[in-house]
Image 1 (cartoon, rainbow, N blue to C red):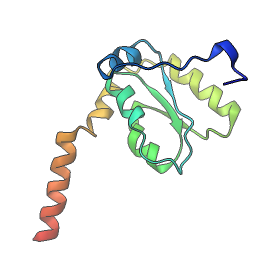
Image 2 (image 1 turned 180 degrees about the horizontal axis):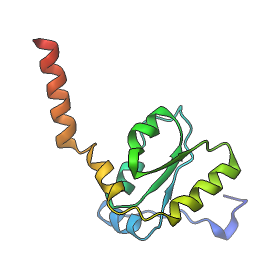
Image 3 (image 1 turned 180 degrees about the vertical axis):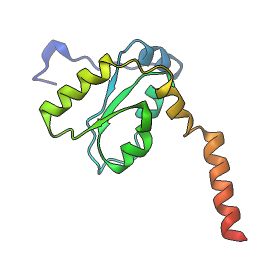
Image 4 (image 1 turned 90 degrees about the vertical axis):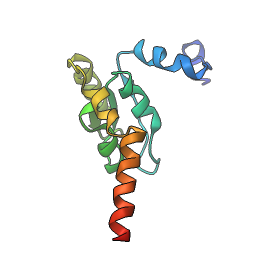
Length: 120
């Protein structure tokens, strides 16, 4: 934070304000590396219609799907290029539709099917 000076500000919001915060943005960018687990922030952003740019690893590939673009975040030039590409694309409902794959109602049904297949 020292290097960013006044260009960085840490804020806190109530949970019900978060969708409006996401919708005020053009893009969510996450540079998390593969050792970081499931990123709920990616789903939250996509659920509001916001496309995402994330690291190209199996976890994010599954989460992001058609709701954004993936890149090797250690390649700074490629990372910058993919951000530009993502900002130029008309994403329509793709991010929101991708997030719906992880809706709790859908997840519960998948777990139920899995458990039933193990019992039978």
